[in-house]
Amino acid sequence: MMAAADRPRGSEIAGLYGRKIRFFGVELQITDTIVLWGLIVQAALFLVFGRRINQPLLLAAKNAGLAALYVFSVFLLTKVKSRILYFLIRTGSVQLLFAYLYEATHPLQLMFLPWQDVPVLAAEQAVFGVQPTLWLERFISTPLTEWMMFSYVIYLVVYPLVAGLIYFKHGERALEDYLFTLGLVNLACDLGFILYPVAGPMWYMPEAYSVPLNGGLFTYLGEYIRTHAHLAGGSIPSPHCSVATVMWLMTRRYVRRWFYILAPVVLSLYVSTVYCRYHYISDSIAGLVLGIIAILAGPSMVRAWNRRAGRRRSKVTS
Image (tube, rainbow, N blue to C red; front, side):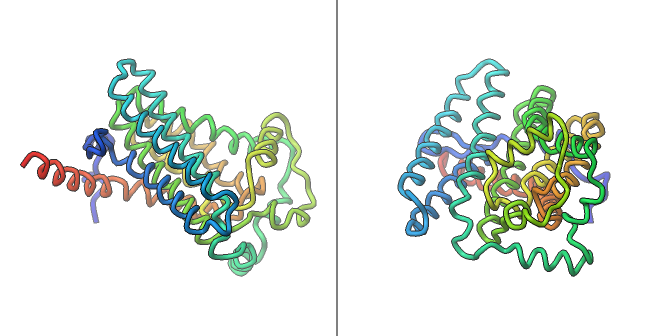
């Protein structure tokens, strides 16, 4: 087992990034590849299971159009001189496509299985002797609910904030490390939604809750997101927990002071997903574990990419 002192540091891991493969005249990095493969595979699923989906051709065409726009954004980056503009194009294009893939996965969730909330609830009852999401009702208070909703909602700000902190301190390659690892967990979550669809507490058993979640501004925002942005499913693994884990551990890798600043928020976020009834505890634990796996596995995957990119470049030049 690798000793702690022998583990690669942030600068060493960032140094792994930057190898590219030429695709129709555009040079793609490993992050680009997983984004494009996500769009392509999802479009293929729309077409293969078209009889079960509304407007599958339109959905597949949308993915194709977004893939073309994304490749254009990669090409555009080679012309950009401003660091701020580079950051906005690179981070915006990647993170917005992750958000799109999450939303577009919804019609694919019941291709193989019906909602699996009953087995999840049964397993949690067997392990904990209670339903954790209902058991937490005894602790509900207005101040605690507002803090939990703050922890849940502020994730949307922390997501690009960490990208900016990493990029403007350590540069493009460190940013690629962040974006690629986020891509791993986002696509793994999307796959999980399809292979094991879980509707979620407020979709499956809203009548089971007897204590309202009252709070202030952040409670309003959290409920607004639940009502206007969330759909049934998208539960296991929890994207909130997996992405938050990657964000938090990436601050430890590159901007360590922020690891401690964000600690109370991220730790509260894990609890908030269950307290605020967005997820079962199984979803949240799965998301946490997925985030850790992605952090650990990412460097090895990039090394494999570099070997492949090196072989392709050798064939071109020989």
